[in-house]
Length: 395
Image 1 (cartoon, rainbow, N blue to C red):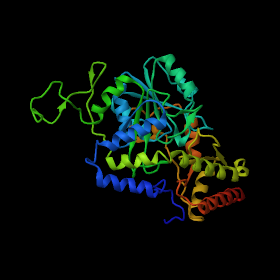
Image 2: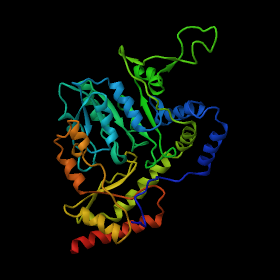
Image 3: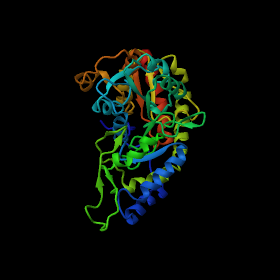
Image 4: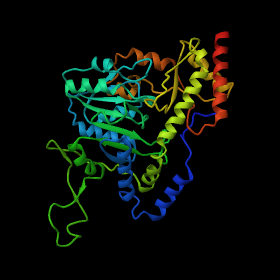
């Protein structure tokens, strides 16, 4: 089906300055990976975020894989993860030995809370993954107090919420590790893929370069001939006296050069999306009682990576079908509860006590909401939603 407004695979367009940065890197970079643009991008990211050491990687899933390794999970260790999230938030931790315990979400904010996490804590809990889903920063102050009480590692999945903050502190800087994404769908994208891992912990900072790049390191002794015995040494990155297998998760120089420029624009992009989201929400306020419930936030705690609503019971499928077939607008449902998937059932993680997750997913709808939509398209979405909700109640 051809849509007037598809659910886009690309978040934004690029400025001439951003395009020129890519061309310059293509022409001038002495190496196309692990070069000066990587260092500059990481430094610029650290300055923007305000805390921690940043490590650029090829995507956020790679960063989550390394986060799982840094947790040093054993077969008895449990890790608490939201059931309502993208699969990459979860499976790396199962791959590296952890037992997933699913946490429920809050129906109004659509993210985990300190209460839903606390219900999941046992004597075997080692870590918590907090996902700032849809662009909304969860209550990290309360969550960190709980984690400190139980001596738990906290990983913030900020893939959808770069630039959001609480009381002036950026998302991703509260926990032990922050994970960011520059995927094609995100508010800023380094040509489709890209990610960043941020940490304040010295023991993590010291080994991530080797963990990220094949275990490469310098020889520990002076060499008379630079080519002997080889270009570089290979060793296991070690954490707490235990070796970790290395990876190859490097981000290319072209993507890093673009990322440097995009950091200048992230706050502007977030603000524009936030204003548009609230324009839609305000225009549809009269429909809340009759069908749609949005999460309205007017400050920079929400970046509105996505714009989702909870439909009144029984309306969701009618809504999506009418929007698609009558108005040519492709709405979707997202984040099937992970415990419902065969993959997690087969892995032994098919049980959960997450009633809010079930209720929200079974009634949620996600509207097309990439930054590159034009004002006329936003207005068309608003009028189409109004008509669709009204038509549902006439049936």
